[in-house]
Amino acid sequence: MPFRGPEIYVKGDYHYHCKVDGGFERFCGYEDIFYENERVYEWYFHGETVK
Image (cartoon, rainbow, N blue to C red; front, top):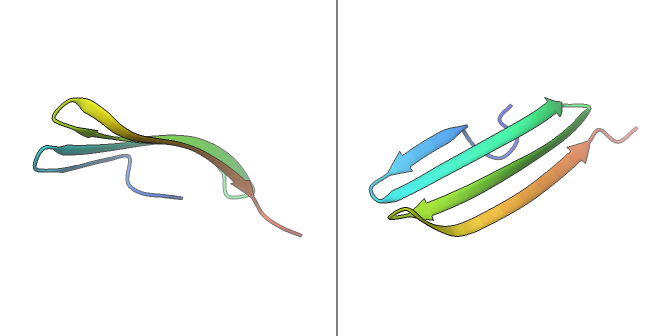
């Protein structure tokens, strides 16, 4: 980890959050970005190793 970004990142009025469940072999997660307490982006992601 991290698969996409850190769990929390703040820069000025922007706040990024990322939550991941699972491990490298199989995982799913959700991330969102807020600007001044308004959500401006969200993304659900998942993945797994390819054999």
